[in-house]
Length: 414
Image 1 (cartoon, rainbow, N blue to C red):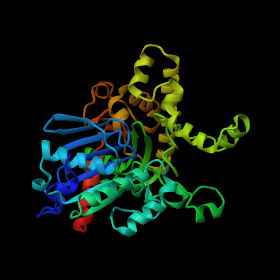
Image 2 (image 1 turned 45 degrees about the vertical axis):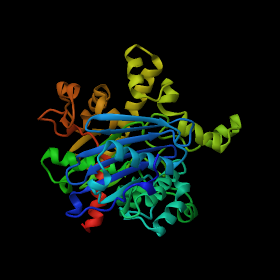
Image 3 (image 1 turned 90 degrees about the vertical axis):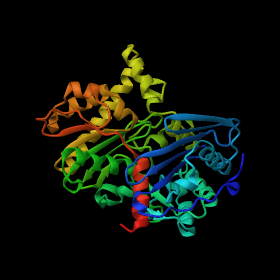
Image 4 (image 1 turned 45 degrees about the horizontal axis):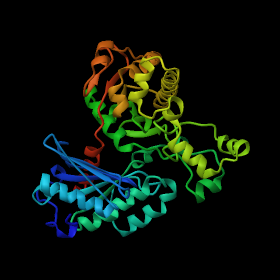
């Protein structure tokens, strides 16, 4: 396998940078997702997923022109993963040198209070990201490893960091401040940050377009429902409140994460079971949520078991709906006026039963469900009636396109 140093150097393309292709990177501790996407149109030129980095048997999938190419081999670290990435483009296309990407856009989970917008990556930015690792110890180290390797692999391309948390930096102090000791807030930056910002920003903007309004004149509650899930109140294109807080654990019930909990639970479990903080942290991140309620973190499996009458799956569904309704109602009151509710991400886009259950409970807000539209929704779809006082939509998210747009807008100075 040729290393990055053996490949033809990839340099930025000429022309309108805002329209050009961006290589979007989402690096985790043992995985690397990537997509070459045109920032102007959102067209995907190629996508890929490299899994099991550092484990016995790695796996890479590269999809271009509707065809998936699969490679299985040992992938020892992120440097090896990027060597696989460049080799997949070289073998299966499109050729990166000919495609002339204008930038590499990196998804970074946590930017703390330091990064309120997309930034060009330099040594100072990297050092700040390293200092922020305690805020996202499960996510930021992988993001940083991806950035460091990409800088070596594509030294001639601008590298841009786009933060999950940045969109929520517009929240007012009343929304992000925790009622904890001042020393915690000042010394350790303890506050709510929020996540899934690129998804919430994209979906809010698309929802405004579906309403025929400008995003600046639209109030939307976005429900990003995937293995990770969060709700966000978007007022005039800006986040004013969201369900997640300091970490991605809070708010809604997720695949393996619990959402909101009584803050006394860690001390209680320590007293009654001797559980340590690392054990508690592992349980909340990996053993809770749907997995704890129904024995499976995959919502599709939960829904199949619910249809078969499984009581654990029925309870899981009810808890998910209850938590969604609670946060939806709260965020609607925060907004004061609500124009639309938007469902997005894997569960939100593909589970009509869940949407119906939530929207039936949201009749108080003025939502009237179009049953047929909800059942058959595919792509961007209005699922409320024409007379509904508050509209409801399914809006497929496109975080990669949002990252590409953010990257090119930064480079173009807009």
